[in-house]
Figure (spheres, rainbow, N blue to C red):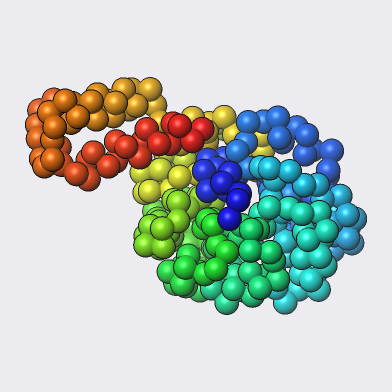
Length: 269
């Protein structure tokens, strides 16, 4: 699977498929991944026109319409004709992801958007499905499906379920859902920080103004990087093969591995 930018994306910005003029601004926003939306953002009357405006390029994916809708097969044909490297599948579960994988070349990454109670319960199988590169939490639709408020801590059960399923399958951490507040960067940052504390590694954005706050939260801070470098240097100097003491803390293999992963995130940017 060649679309490494799917696996490392912190900020994932939606652009309505019927507004192709916004794509240039979206790509200039600093978003790691731009998703051209053919589903919820586009009315039935203009889905065909939106599909014809698809453009290829690294850092661009398309959210198709779900399987079983009248537009699914045409969306797949549009993806194939343009040569896009990543597809976001709404209402994803293992069965729909496996079916999509059969319709796509093996090097097209599937971004599985989990938006239902069934999808959350099916997350372990979904994360293992062929072609799936990343899980994404569709929190708004999940709230509609379950009756859970988008601001409720009860949402964290679903977030944690996606985190655990991703880790078990060897996938990168999942992407959190949107923050609906368009003019409150502090709220975006707070929501992203909560998601990060649960093990998520990115967040959906619905406006370019949200991108900077999301990127900042999911990028390692310089203080954390300095501590990780110092820790690894101390371990190397001590020739540590087991647990050792560093700055008043016990350090063992998992702590060292976390530091290595933090440095790896910096290099991937």
